[in-house]
Image (cartoon, rainbow, N blue to C red; front, side):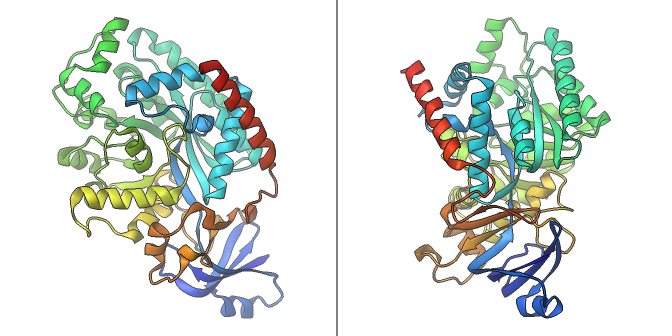
Length: 450
């Protein structure tokens, strides 16, 4: 057993308070209260005093591609579809082992910024292997592609084989498996519905990139633009639907498949789309930094909230984001939304912190186990230093976390009661070895491309 003590505790599910204590046993939170009260009840239990810090639940990253971490800063200032084309091209230069190292970099970075649970989309399955190696928890969404209906059965069979293999290997771990039909233009209508039927039959969560770009919306509504041109080159037939992306998904019966959906991005939606989404089992996985970096748009977070749609934050990949950091996502989400709406009351800091923790856990159907500091939940938590220049003074903890904190202020990350990161060090992982390997891979990319 262990008691954690800190200047501030922010449970999320209840009001924050000072001079807090958390009693942990076998990776589970047994009690949470004022430190003096906890100590009085458990006098002989060892205390770990974090000091001038805020203890909050570990962040939940609802959308990432950890294996692309080595591409951070490599593909610069290209429009979205040129960026995607470059990513596919450069992907071919690396081996599976090199992508495993890249995923290690991403996951270690997430731990150092306070992310304790992630939902990662992968085609290769690399992230699953690394999560399992590190003993971490999360959901791995197995991606599937196939825009041509003639390739449907082969793509579906391949998906089932990969999912079943990962499910077998996930036994005894805290990793869950889901499926990810990549987008509605990289997966045909027929394959999309078959994948969702398969997911519903096997109780698998479904994650889809939806309404991410104006080109996607133009393709669905008018049947024109760069996506339509690519379809024409490949001989894949397509007719304009005269509807928004969300209306189209409703029309084809996607929401009637009975799946638990996570729609990623949603930068190109309107009030009617939000109304449709609010009627179904859909969570919104929003990636403010990635969307802004790629110039694809700003998700209407305040409208999504008014529609009572659950929201979580994702970092996406380091190929489309400078970092894997929930502080940046919360800050960008808040500032972009207030700037776009010209309304300071459109969204509040306490909402942003909740979306990065408890609501993120709800996106992944894990909110009964993680996302807040409560009795009976996993001891997944982080400690944020309040002794730096950017940390004084403090008047409101939620404001402080969203507007003033940086990832370097995270001084401890704990998962299931086990400290995995503390004061710049990883007790169980060799950070220097990963950095050395990443340098070699990045040199290989430079030499191959330049």
